[in-house]
Length: 227
Ligand SMILES: [Zn+2]
Image (cartoon, rainbow, N blue to C red):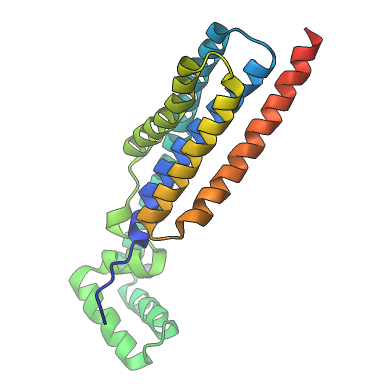
């Protein structure tokens, strides 16, 4: 057997970062395409793009903060309740923990002994991990989550904005192609870091991006005809 490192523990934060950057590219590029298809000036397109970046980053931060905070609140409340139960009825709690181990395949007598030893070591940690599924290493950090999501979105959104500044003619073509390349690279990078197939990830993310951009370009061109 050769040693192989598992990568699924990396997937949590990586997934959040890639999701944020993806979001930044897709939403900003789509908005820019819509505005450009309506026949706006480069100046107007740039203003719309920057506004999309700021609005998106703030929205990501707020959403992530609220979501992670409520998760943290739930975990805190669960742990408090568990600590109370442990103080009030340690015997039942030990039986409860042992039952969990029995269900996982350990024979009842040994399960009781495992529960006893783990609870003697750190009762709350044992219950938090095996009964509630809360491990101390993944406890939620709202501010950090909000900041990193906003940063990831900003980095993603910066790419289409850069394309606007580089291509004054053939902007729509450059935007569509450049954004798809960006999305594919991002998907492949995430897949590589997570140990998943790269091509499939790149294709998947590009398809969704292409769909979003096609739709907004269509809507923009419909409005453009009116003016
Ligand atoms: Zn318990």
